Length: 226
Image 1 (spheres, helix red, strand yellow):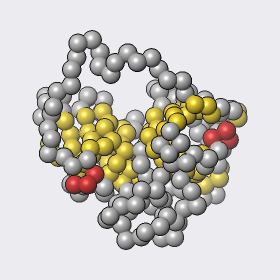
Image 2 (cartoon, one colour; image 1 turned 30 degrees about the horizontal axis):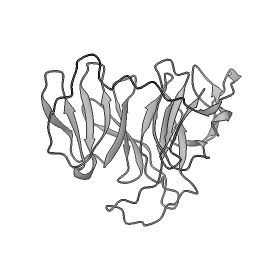
Image 3 (tube, one colour; image 1 turned 90 degrees about the vertical axis):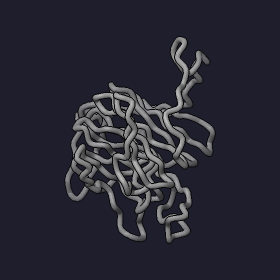
Image 4 (tube, helix red, strand yellow; image 1 turned 180 degrees about the horizontal axis):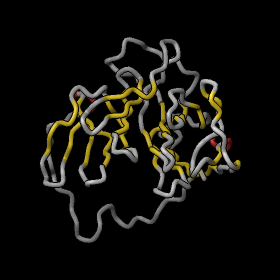
């Protein structure tokens, strides 16, 4: 449960991973509660209106913006990551892309991606070099990482719901539940930090790292953790 968070910098956990103990300064209590709905003030600022960029995609997901303002997103069924740059140019960034879903940039400019083709978590460098951050063995594989957020200290939170994919050979989950995980910096074994949600999906946090929002799609609620 997320109530067992321990603070190292801003966000982290006191965990033993591969014999390494990550020590924190003080234990903090995380309160989970349904977030209050914000007033409906409209999705777009002022008189702004959405403009169609392209429509050749099958199912788009995982928008993430780098420090320069370039927008990256996935077309998961077609197994591509696309880039829409600040000059309005659209191009394929990575193909194939591990059936990437949710994505988020870390503080070093690497694109962290939920690559559920083989139930992995990836780090994609600006030169497109892929590093696999999480790859659990057969029999213990993740359900299918769905969305990801990088905390200010570099720790990674990601959701792991189970959605049966037509490109998988397995037909049943290998994990006991659909959880939210935390991956400490430099580690490869994620820790389940929220196990009570029905089907966690989207998650995000603010820049100060003091709050984490998680959507439970089957529970029809969004939770706030502090």
